[in-house]
Length: 350
Image (tube, rainbow, N blue to C red; front, side):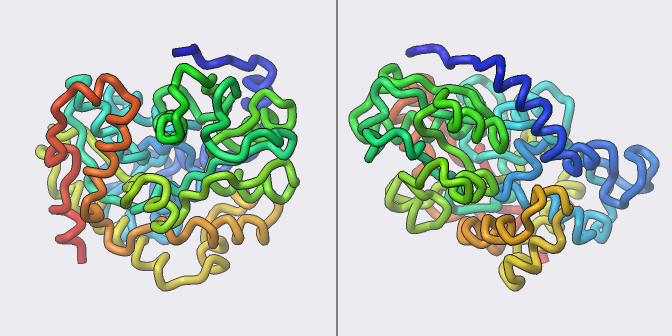
């Protein structure tokens, strides 16, 4: 398998661009859910690392804070952000945070590495991801054309990495036949597409909406809806979730229940409010100066979310089948799916 290509120029650009795009997200890393400096709020405190606070697929994290539901439950949640879900995973297993908002598939991958991690509330039943193709890459009409190409992902070992490999394998292209390039999301993804460093790539809204608006690329595979997930994977693909180390969950059930209560309130709220109303509740910086485009991004992604936080039936099995198609560690491992998630807290949420 080829190694991912590093792009120094993009790395520099990414630091500058992301600092402005996620300014409000970074503020969250030093502000509690009650709007006071972390560590000075009465009640239980929990740190959550999000694999990109400004990504629409992870919107329930910041929206729950904005709606005041953490505070209603009597917990002080500090939201931190990293550009990719795999970095959120690393922060969790290293003990820097108590929870991670990222893709459920990391729980299976971690189990093969001897790490017991449990998804406690499931935000979605579809990936919310989109495979974008540069308008300059006229020869890419299907994932079967990935061979010999540079395909963008958020990071090596990320869920976009997993799904990109699966799309290739499903269409007869081995993982070693194309180069996966870690380009992050937002400005760094867009810059890679513009410069031709990647010919295609997997990303989420609002990046998708920005690429289409700039007419830099077009959609090859849309996985933002249950129907899109069914077509791409043959079933529901639970993605965005809150997962935590299993031992921490077992030792802090009351706190976990309060967190899940807050998230389920948000999911229900989202299901009864318009994209415009949701966008209005999010930090102004997330719209990057274009509220209409941001609202459209939310509208396109809303179908991926659950309304109750419960793991969709057959979802874990779909994820396992997808990962086994290309990941040798998981293909040859016996996964105990029952230990990768729980519906206990979501079903008990009011």
